[in-house]
Length: 229
Picture (cartoon, rainbow, N blue to C red):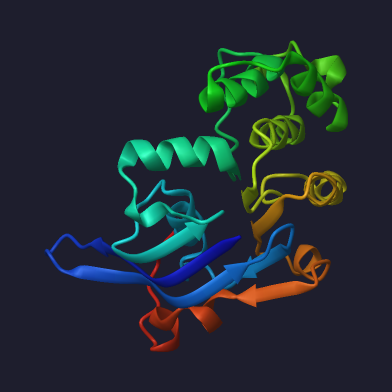
C-alpha cells in the first residue's frame, strides 16, 4: 500500500554543505495497518511524513502509494495524488481562520475533485462531536476543538493513507485519548492506513506496531543524527 525504497533526504546548510536527514532502505505500511513512529527529537519524524506526502520532495528513492511512485511525478502530479489519497493532521492544525469549521472541512474536499459533499462534512463534524460548533471559526474554538476539526478535514477526501504528526501534542490530557480513539476508530472503519508520529509513551503503547525511526533510518544508525524538525 505504502512502500519506501532507498529514500534519501538532506537539507542544505548555510555553508553550502548537505545535512543528511533520512536514508531509509525500506519501509512498508500495509492497507489499513496502523503504525506509530517514535524517536528522539530531531531524528527526522516530521521530515519523514513531509517526504511521504510530497510536501518536501525526496532527493532520491521511490515512494509508492497505491502502486503510484510519488517520487517520479511532477509537482502537479504529487499535489493531485496527495489531495486524492493522503490525509494530513498537522501538529499546528493549519485551519483557515476566515472559515468556519464546516467550511474548513468542505475545503478539504474541494481540493480533491472540485466538488463538495455537504453530507459527509456534516457527518464528520458530528463524528468528532462538533456538529453544534460547525459554524464557529477557529478563533472561537478551543485548542481541542480545533484539533478535532483538523482531523475531520484530513478525513474529508476519504484518503487511503492518514499521516498524523503529534496529534495530541497541543491537547490537554483530558482530551488526548479522545483524539487518538477518534483517529484510530475512523481509520479502522474506513479501511485507511495510519502512520502516526508521537513522543507520548501512553499513545505509542496502544499500537500493535511501534517503529523506532532510528532503527530504519541509516542516518541515525551511523551516528549522524542532527536536528531535522
